[in-house]
Amino acid sequence: MAYVITQPCIDTLDQSCVDVCPVDCIHFEEGTDRMEYIDPDECIDCGACEPACPVSAIFAEDDVPEDQQVFKEINALWYQDKAAARAKVPS
Image 1 (cartoon, rainbow, N blue to C red):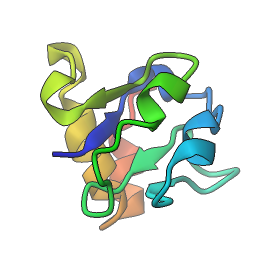
Image 2 (image 1 turned 180 degrees about the vertical axis):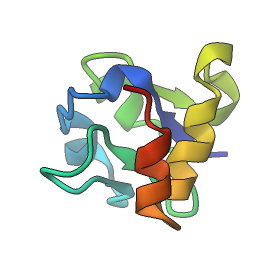
Image 3 (image 1 turned 135 degrees about the horizontal axis):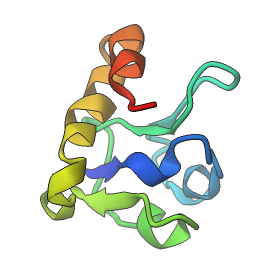
Image 4 (image 1 turned 30 degrees about the horizontal axis):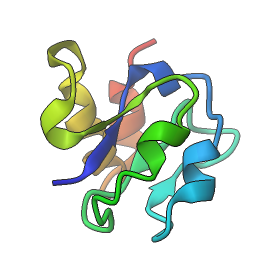
């Protein structure tokens, strides 16, 4: 199980989660991405990012709200095909 960044992060990009992640598994490309992404293969499920997020955008994979489920795919996809992931981020 990994943590997932969801819709409240869009256009926020606070980076508090990046600062507390002990394995550096949260990424984005400044000036290109509208949100941050957690690499599900690198995430160690420590949960440090969740309370650090000022907009409550981060959830354990099993706790992602039903209306935010697409963000599981978006986070993982960004590490395989950034353009495809960006295209799935809602406007």
